[in-house]
Structures are given as structure tokens and as C-alpha cells.
Length: 71
Image (cartoon, rainbow, N blue to C red; front, side):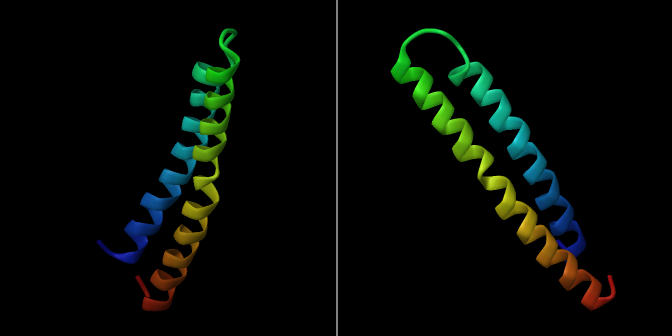
């Protein structure tokens, strides 16, 4: 896989992480019920959402490598 493709995959993964975080929060953390389950759902949603910046930083680095290589 070349650097440009890797960059595109990581960018998509970043957006998927954001959407997954929101879905996890609404399905697990945003519902009424057991406070422990709700807290776990909220924390897990935040955890997944924190992956997005890592994916975006890596995508940027691979994009710079692709530009440097002339791809």
C-alpha cells in the first residue's frame, strides 16, 4: 500500500472513530438505567473518540511522505 492510500485510509478511520464514539455514547451512555452501565458507556465513547486525533496525525504524516515522494 502506498503512502497516499495509507493516508486516505487513516483519514477515513478518524471520521469513523468520531461517528462510532457518538453511536456508542447514544446507545450505551445516553440511556436511562443503571448508573454504572451509563458511566461505562460514556467513558467508552470518549475513549473511542480519542482515537480520531491519532488517526488524523498519522494521515497527515503519510500525506507529507507521499508529497515528498511525488506520488
